[in-house]
Image 1: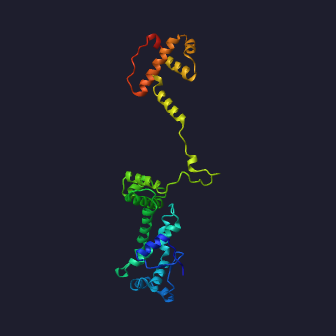
Image 2: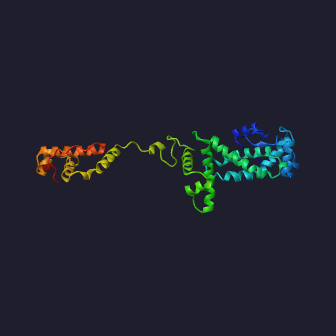
Length: 302
């Protein structure tokens, strides 16, 4: 008989919830050595009646429950298939889904009508969602945001099939009945669902390269570039001769005497024009009042 594997944590959970199955040391549901070939020919309702009437610790109960699990394992696979794009391994989700199936078997009452499959499907999906909500998050996120993350994933899959394209945020917000702010919060929370270590080695990278090796460091030239852009915003406010003096002084690295000789003015005039240009730019960049113009019309002529 096929065996349904579950994780150690989920086995303990199932036992605490009264799943009633005995578990072997390697983690599979067993029938506790009970051999009842006749049970295999019973339908779901008859097996469910056995699970309800037989003692929980009896081999008869365990065998009937195991038969039901094996019959409906395709339902578990169907529920898990919706999350195949998630970072969680499919095998782990399958194990969690089987825990939900066992709970459904123990809680379903055939007398109320309906089928076990119809009752078990939301139980399995709910168990998987609780696993994502409670076990996979590395940081604290509000429960409502966690649930919205799962709803967005499911809605994205559904709308992609219906629309024939990847849905936009407007499509998702309208489909889920949430605001764009709520959708943005869910997007940001999903980014923190599986954080990566900066020291983790990168796949396909030679040597021992890590993510931290690829991150940029502080660039001293960035501050200079920002300063140049700030000056450029007010550059054209200066007279042409003052702009020329600034270029010769700070880009051409010429002395005031050399500048004066090239422009045909004295070194003192160069100093005054340079001070005026720098004072004007300084006041504009710092948001101060423009300094009073103390230069003569001769000095300021273009």
